[in-house]
Image (cartoon, rainbow, N blue to C red):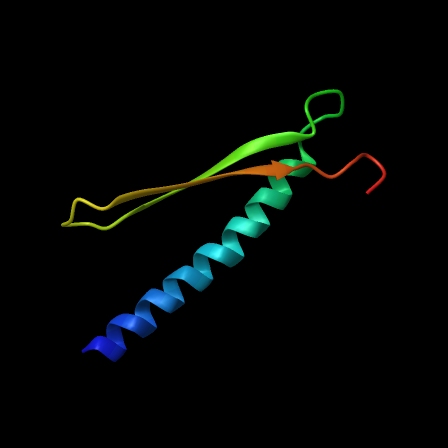
Length: 67
């Protein structure tokens, strides 16, 4: 049982990491020049049937216009 749980959590976290990176890169590319070079990013993890509400926040440095 513990092995199944651990594997399913790892699979979920891998999916979160890959898709979140893709979406952050897409979103960063749509932000125009002239504003601040950093933005706050936030991820919220919940689990149905529990009171879990875990928030992770970090500052993301946007790419400059030259790449």
